[in-house]
Amino acid sequence: MSKPNHDLYDNGTEGASQLSQKAGENGLAAASTSKHNAYQAFRPRLLYCPLFAWSAVTAGKFIAVFLQQLSPQFSDNNVGMTLSGQYAITSFLAGWGGSLADATERKCENWGCGRLKVTSLGVLLGTLSFLGHDLPQYINFRHLQEMINFPGDIQMCWHIMMRCITAVSLAIVAPSLDGLALAHLNCIEGSSQSEFGIERMYGAVFWGAGSLAAGIGIDHYGFGFLYVLVVVTALASYASMVVYLVSIQQDSTNKFSKKNFLKPESNDPATISCQSINSPESGGSDDTRQKLEAKSDVPAFDLFLLICNEGYGKAIIFFVFTLATGISVVDNLAFIYFDFLGSSNTMNGCTVVFTVLFELPLFYLAPFLLKHHGPGRLLLYAGGAYVVRVLGYTIVPEGHMGIILMLETLHGISYANLKTGSVEFVSLIVPKGSEATGQGILIFVNYLGVVVGLAFGGWLQEISGPRVMYACMGLIAFFGIAVLLLAETCCAKGNSSEKIRSENNIRPDEFPFAQ
Image (tube, rainbow, N blue to C red; front, side, top):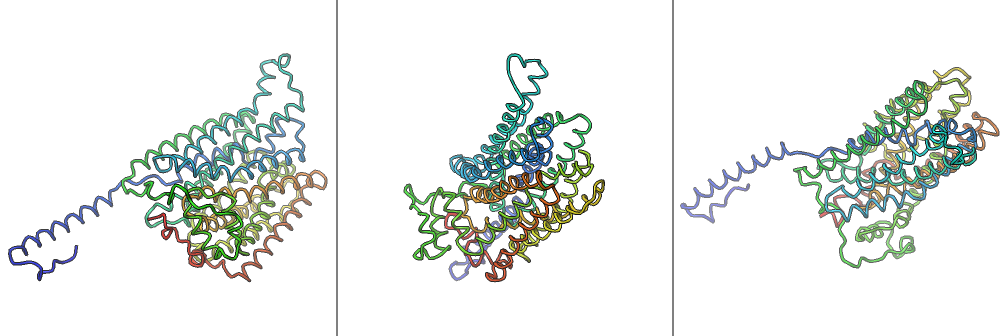
């Protein structure tokens, strides 16, 4: 409180002003103490832990061998095509899933409730679809074949349908969760969206733990253990959502208010056409972004055009696509190759743990790495680690899983840097209130690469073997590296996240609707 101006007071009021000053100082001290003791909501890491353990069961690395165990009709090519179709559905629906989460959030009175509703729906859908894989075995166990005819081809079609439903659940859960985390970080005083990697680090821990538990359980109890594990992790996910939402409502910092969320400027917001984004009269990406910020519901395609508005953005998107093409085969077909090398399910689970060991420090150091290297260079590091890894796959002899474990550490470098760099780049561009939609677009590009990678990789592995397939995937990733490296050199825009923010004028606290 400022010192009173004695020229404005007489001697009779001077004492009163001093008392008022002391009372004000005491009030400020009390407020400071109250702020220090304020109850703060749980961070999004609470959600990432059980949800990633759930994802490790429903869509993890064991799915390929799980499908081959369910039906002899699943050859390497059929597995690749099935998973390719699964990710194709997720890719094309991810933007819708993110938009649904953002739209539901706007309609809810409480902060975070809308995105959590959408996330819970996705978890329910994914859990039921995974349990649906057991229906043919249940019919055989109950000797109901005479009433329900379930031949081999029909069984394979049934399992493919279950994977398609799982794809819809992933298209809902992934962008909703990432969008919620980014919005949460935007609300915390002293935090920023560059700390997304720290939150995501906890998901990596439980992804590894879930995969290891799945591997050990399969070796001891068979693949039926996965049905129990998916129910347990789903219940844990719902419990974490309830705890998180209650903590948000009880948060005493007043940061999680609907005032911090996007509010429409009028009942009839201006319509932004796709052509206006690329027109010379639009004034470039800055002017377009300001127009999009004024809208209450930004179409996903408009955001996609905004991200690709400049050459550097196009190079980022192309690189993410090519690297996702390569990573798809190691994420989904690697365990088939490891079985060929003589691995057990427990050892397969251990390979995931080794990948997580290198993800953790990189996710934890994400703010530092983004500040000093920028999202573009992190993506280049991810691509380089992937190329070295898959080239190593081509020379590993049978029975030498120890070499595979060492190579798996490079996957942690690839995935952590890819996730951190791509999420940061997109979050710097999309306006506040559209976080989930922006992440849905990123998932669309990622999974589109996964679709191409699995379709091509599964076919190539069946006709030429896994070693040739991994060598080809390394060449595809190298081409993406070359394009991004050229953009980094010519555009000179990947030095740091702060530089991208300043050049694009997109600091979150400067948005018109953030007031």
